[in-house]
Image 1 (tube, rainbow over the protein chains, first blue to last red):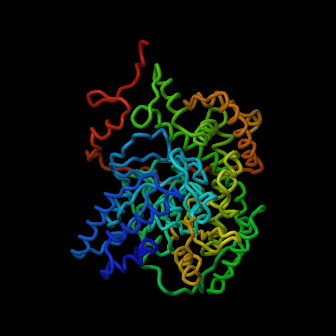
Image 2: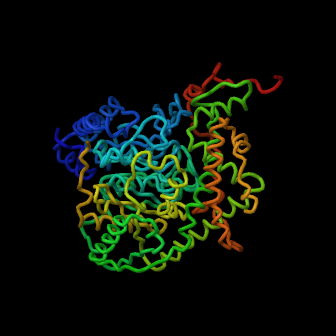
Length: 488
Length: 98
């Protein structure tokens, strides 16, 4: 094996262009890596071997004809909530058993147009509701850095497969941190784009005012390239913004100076109960950015501590409406009843897991007559305050540096009995979804027990170029992203 | 949020949401969700008088397109996903005259 699976998109693209390998070689290498390690990691739900090799052959033929598509011949894994025509799309739920997607999500169509090889579908928390990929009905996923620990969630399969070199990159989705948190736990790079940048057509909706699709990759530059492929206006998603997509990939140069860039440090993000190793590692990363020429300024995001309360009202309210479509009538599981109402109740009882049921019930309650103003409307007003915090902060700085999570990856089973405890871990990622701006997560060190720690770089709305530039400069001058787990 | 202090009736709300819960689930969720509701009550500390609600981070209004016939999903592919179908139509239990 030529170890092609260990390389990045850019490294492989160079080899492909030079004729040093073919896409078929890469896919064969990646499939061999999956065979060797996925029995332990458990990232994949389905692997499309024959189809992946066929797509690779097509890519090689296109290259022979002179094609230089940006992702030509690069194998990528897909989170199991994105529709790929002719494939299952279970969202890790029993309620979508037997469903076959009749169309491609817009991001899938864009990946295909860019020449990407679609490898297979990876595990997640059911309907993206969770932070550890333990709320999954169809499989268990472990953290490649320590198999007894969670990979994070909800895009746990996406991060785990990239960290384990079982895919060159992956797509995830981020509603309250579901790209950034698993990327941090697994030592990968992940980007939550600005709300409206990426079309959600074909993404199974969880909370529509928060959901965004984004890349998980081995380097910042790879994420930049993928982001460029994914972004763009789509008439099929009315929240999609009609604006030009910058050349994110090309905008990253060898220049590692951060001179002239102001980075904000919010005191509210160094929360009580934060793991001291995480705090020290992130503060070291801040110092490193300073040594590259950045100016560090103190900023305040005073309403951050309310983000979890606001998030779990708004996200569950929207989920209760979005998941009403899973009723056993048009697709997926059906448990028969004497009338439709009985059929709905029985189907949803069997089809949904506990966390999904809890969130639908909470969401139904906060939207119900008599409670709407007290919960949902109030949460929307506090959401405005959280947005205003970011608007004020970005008048003082170009980007914000923060941890991604209060602790490194915890043990499997450690928090499954206590939903509120699991929710509280999202404290550092949910504010960005509520405000709608962009953020990326990249590796900035390891705990003494060898688990990755992530640095979060938060940008203003549509300031992806700024956060990618900062992340790229950090990555070029550190070696954390080059470390690989020993999977055992 | 004063009414909230009474807690929610999980059994009743589950009926509104069309989810049949077992007795064990009802009891478990009752405790867990009351804990979550208690947690979110901290929003009462804030004075939100005069604050406009945010529904979407980037509100886009009146997205219109020309009323033109486009390509639809393949009928057979869509009906093939139905748990029960006859002659290209989805079958459901009888609603009237039971």
